[in-house]
Image (cartoon, rainbow, N blue to C red; front, top):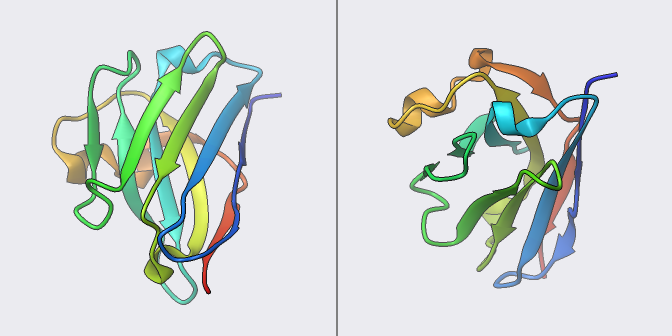
Length: 128
């Protein structure tokens, strides 16, 4: 069974940090570009970061640039999203997804229909 599973979400105070993990089973992630997406209550799901299959290239939404870092460990078949300086507006369900290819333009790197496999999401709540 091909599956992506996110973990690492939770409740954190503003200014705090979390690291999300996205682990694959049933297939190897190193063939795929990976995107992280999030959906806040009442809003559409949006792309926030993407990484190429090798990990050499990354892109970020302006809203998270400088605070979030995407990385991958293909040996562990896992991708990470390190989130620092969290804000209440970062509260959302976070999803990872695996797709066929990376695109150097951020807006084209997070086209959701380009992604084949999706995780079930993990909740991140930023609140004091």
